[in-house]
Length: 273
Ligand code: BTN
Image 1: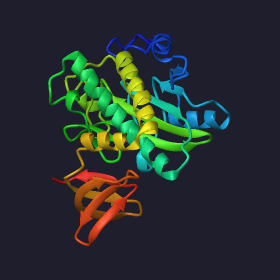
Image 2: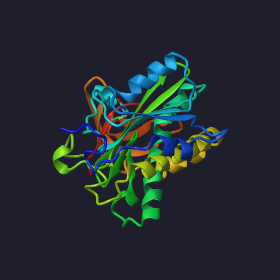
Image 3: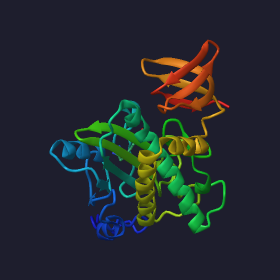
Image 4: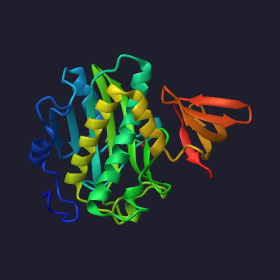
């Protein structure tokens, strides 16, 4: 079988040179966009690069991952070039609260970028135009997961890893509750999509650094979890049920249960109603 990157015409390769030309600017957040054909996990690689001294602003994109990592110890699997699989190295934050916000900043950036992209492309509502967030940072279309985000601390920075299902067919989905842009009838050209996301991420990161309250307002606006009945699987096999009433100043989800309010900093949320 041909190993040419063009062998799957539905899944053309990314153009690293065009991405760098479009996104790397003097004084901007992004310093370099590296695209590799295959790796284990872009998060693991970028954390290792951070350990060896690379500066924040590096973006590592893989056309395929063999050991993609997900939240809460899960895996992330997808066929080569069927999606966007990338990690960014952001500068260190000076407090645990600010650090805790970065995964939410990424969620706001990706959901906003998808909505903006949909507007430019004239995508009808009910599809990527209505991308929303499930706390902390799954990006949903309706109730189905389109994007997963994994944050991890690294030496001199924070690694944010983003996986977006672009052209996966129904039989390729990792779980039946997932979806892809192709399934949703939305545009599947990965280059402009990656540009839109990285531009929005740089803008939201700047907004967060200047005014956390404004970022929090944007998060609450996009968050489909607020006001919903939820079941939350907590670390250590505990389960909490109640109503999600707020995302507080430190980015924690406030769940109103029979015994009072609980402030959650980690957990797997299921929207019950
Ligand atoms: C989740 O469980 O929802 C988070 C999934 C994050 C997947 C992305 S793909 C690119 C980056 N590299 C990884 O190993 N994981 C993240």
